[in-house]
Length: 334
Image (cartoon, rainbow, N blue to C red; front, side, top):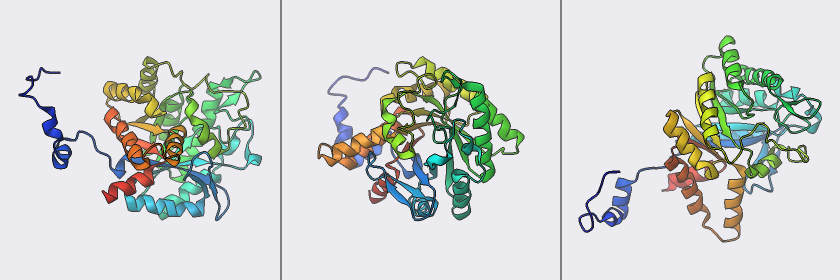
């Protein structure tokens, strides 16, 4: 940074004197276009279920989701991200329901794109909602997650979503080589416009607990964890290697997950690659703010907006956040 003239020639507080000056020199701003809204989809009709560990978040059937999609269009939120909560009877060790062209997610994609063609739809490409053991991949006889066999299923899942008309597939599994395999399959299948947002730096985090409640996978893991494929929270250079590989394999956008505890990774990724970079403000981050606000310890809206602005300041181009509707409404009011 260049040397600035000393006080009193430099008085930084001059630029904080009043609201119009602060607005004039503000470096980062939030807009509804920055948000991707994650939603949880159920089978059936007229179904709405609260997620107790995520106040204000609900699982809902496809017909109830249309109202949410309409709100997103009205508020200018560009993308809905779909996550399934499927019946336990459909969960198997190989997660084969993930590739069912008439499954919950492909049907929901088709319905949303038919009714709201202007709304972007993104789908999670991972097996954990579909496996009886709750892992993101297939297991060998020792319980270790098989990489290449899992990639084959993930590729079939991504093709199923692309055939349904999804705009963005988002592989969240952290298997090696899956971005290249999916990109090649999409190209070979004529799905040249299907975008890939890679969960490139996804950490083995303790912040995911409420999400697992929402998709119904918390109990299935038992005493197992995901540390043999999700990243070690102590590593930063490794994240850059993961991102570099995903870009080389054909990712259009990359993501860091979780969000606030990993803003240093967001900054490094953006500075290093200059790619469209996203962050996921995960369920645990959301739940903490909600719990503190419910106890009167924090100002809900002020903390919500400050936390979201932090992602932009760190270099994120967009944010997956359960606050998307609330934040967009607040921005409109302002």
